[in-house]
Length: 236
Image (tube, rainbow, N blue to C red; front, side, top):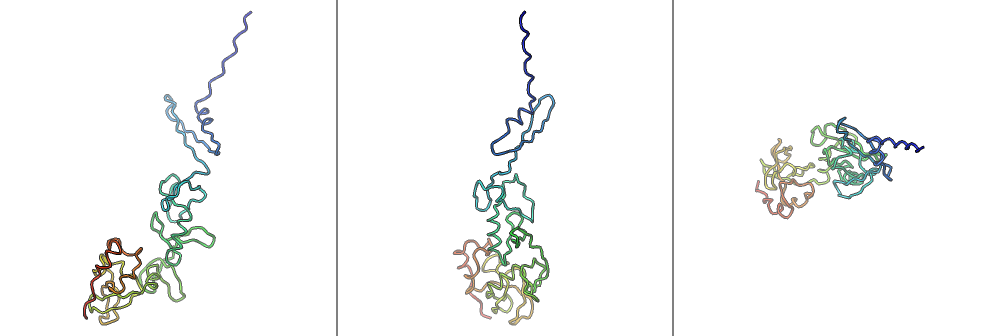
């Protein structure tokens, strides 16, 4: 008698084949999602624990996911192309005023906490210097300062009063409010020379070169261009 043929193996399900082919040596886990009963199509999404990313600040590639910055002020998806390494964010905070930097994604104020994690610099109050409601970054007891006034105390430059033409040192970066180096700014500060009221100011030509280049308004252009554009002081 002829031996009966052995039964052929049953075909493997499509999803099982996809899941099997998706295994990697890096330990990737596969998530299979099927759609369309007739077409039998499947969407395969891979996620690995050691996904490499590129920092949008230093442009360094193949940065391990463990070294990615976890921003406390905004939610940057893991799949976003605009992500940052932890060291770049730390440098931004270190170079900021009083250890407070600006988030490169949402421009919020952040600092590095004592435990090394990134934290939101969320203390808001009235600055003792400019009297504006701002994020407080330095507490000197009876005096609390915003980031702008801390910078201003480091660069207490001379400015020309629009009304009385006299010079006055102002502990606030008033240059930030000048559209050009020669125009008076849009913000006001109290004149203690002759006016006795709030007036507009512009940077004195002898102090224009002391404005930190990285903080000058973009509308000023390059440093070698805006320095000659500062007009000489007028006679009171």
